[in-house]
Image (cartoon, rainbow, N blue to C red):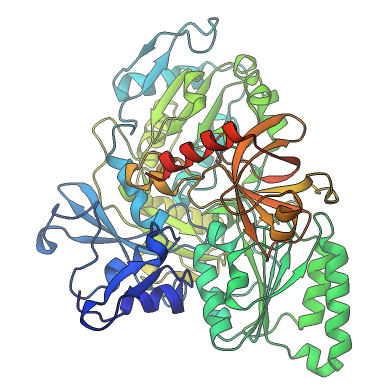
Length: 628
């Protein structure tokens, strides 16, 4: 280390996590973490690339390759709705490192830790590399013999089911598939019968008066509406908004509070769950009262929210108040998946879960794990109702124990194709890594099925894109892969707007330990993180964040042990964290917390009680073990 302070400046000025500090003085100065804590941040890995001398290195990549024998392949973070640009460093057919690939229109050259480090799951022991067939459907789930046939035998099994199906099959998409994969499925279904649909939120068009991500660079007013922390749902946008705040832009955060964006000097406004429309009316009235009509129409601003969380009436009122449409201003809607805009442009409709579970024909789940959306008692019985179940995944899920056929899926680094980010920018994925022997690229095995069924489906991503761009004329800005620049091309449009999310009830009044609990999305609540050993310490722990006054009223402080009961049923032992930024009467907890189902978020009623002394010691010991 030469004490250049690049890493500490990044921690302070860019990410704002304030965790890296210089310790001691003069010749004894060293770089350390605040209070010696683990460096738990969402963008910590960027300091590896910033370090000019290699004092900070990745333990996952260290000693694996030399730069000249491991080429970098440009790609996109396959989970990220922002469309963060990355480079996959590949050696002997395997991804051994992920680096940032600067795109000043999208990501400012920074990437989050999930995109940087979770690639290890591709090469881990949990990776699915062989098909799995479970016979004897009449037996209970978990008591069916499993065989691992060759891919050819597995696809022959699926071909027979499709060829002899009495009821049309249902293909359920996750919203992370490439445009080319979606087109291949659509063409197969169009020629052989069936239906293609996406899980709720996985297909959503751009809102009217949409802004570009780069508009945040010049916006004088940024309004972020919602209870989720941007660092967990769109970490790249958080850095853009922090940069805007640092240059003097007015940033308003509307929700129940407790998000880390408030640390950047954002003005916080309390919005009760279910009361966003009322708040928008009041907010716009205050802006109109504080400005003349001409000034109000000239306010350069960007409004950020999550798909489905604002009504059409609220969007119209905000657009009128801020004078949308206007150059450099508009809405930035955060999509639920990395290719929701692309699926909408291809005309894919969403389907309600009860309709999926009511389907009596065969069901093909492409990268979809129902357990992350609905409880087991809702999706479990549907397994026996359907004629057959096929799951396509890269990693194990609870669905696999009940599926008749599991097809190993290709990771994003192992396939060619395109994704469309939240602003409507189409970007390229390029093949860098070689898929395991038993894994086929989705366009290839779908095209193979089509040939057996007498249909014609393109097997290459390039030809698939040419077809889909021509068939959806006007929805895509370029006609071929070759026209997509390294930074992507803005202009994808078309499709149905995001469906409004189910309304949340009013918050529960604080008192007698009863609070409104928000189970918030969490960046590291993801299957690939769960199967990356080095990221184990980043996964959600049983931590409950309370308003500091609420905690004191309960006789609790930071680090204390407590017990909570959620919705009168789920009981958890938790460790208390406190925040002055969280509105009184409300609490926050990460999705994926042990004892809670992964993936599922939303508002609940929670009752908090102080843990007994013995329970407190057990909880503290468990917390220390998890930290270790």
